[in-house]
Amino acid sequence: MDQQLGNVSFKTSCNDVAQRRFDRAMRYQHSFWYTNAKEIFEEAIKADPTCAMAYWGIALTMMDNPHAAIPRPNLAPGLAAITKAREIGARPSANATISMR
Image 1 (cartoon, helix red, strand yellow):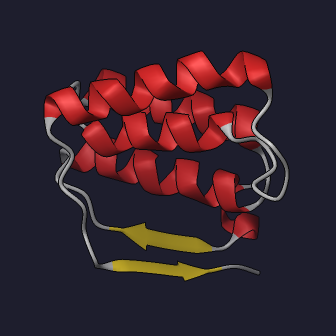
Image 2 (image 1 turned 180 degrees about the vertical axis):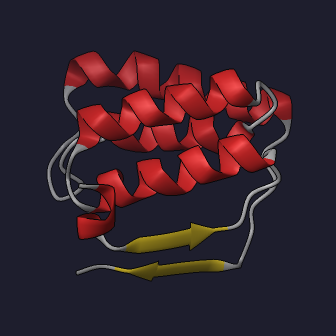
């Protein structure tokens, strides 16, 4: 199923295992499988607790439909994820490549 969703290479400062999980979660995120993406971002955090970008990914999944208002119940957990990413010290990367099928 994963490869049917396309390819994502979004360089982070996470360890190798977390990086692979992060990219996998982004494939799900960009395919509108938000619940699955959130679970995989959580797996990335288990693989590397300093993977701040995985917390950013969790916050992104909380938006649900990016073309609509964020569901009210998702606001607090989304903010908590962003706060945690900031505490860890998220470092953005300009090296993202996304190709969807």
